[in-house]
Length: 108
Figure (tube, helix red, strand yellow):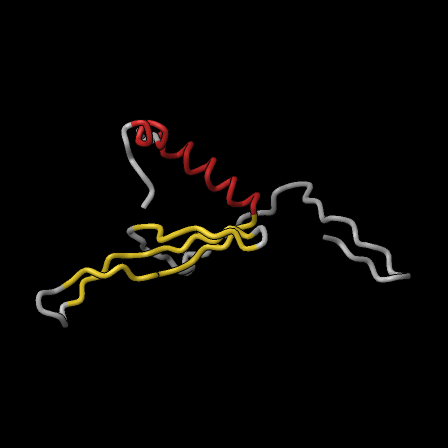
């Protein structure tokens, strides 16, 4: 929903004419996840909650816990681009998501 203050013109949507140059950062944080705990749509922002299996050796017998290790928040467009790019990459690697689903794979 868009609102305008009387006497102040509404701003035009920002358009990107060309992709910006990617600046690589070798010090960017890296997250290792063993799964995706869930997905949420927060007013058009898609949030993926990432988890990792962790051993707790303080208990006997040791147990495996699912621990949230990070979240990724994406705009709708960025989420769609991620899905398309990931599917294309997995197909190229011989790890077809559609074939895995046809074989009975499920999201947990």
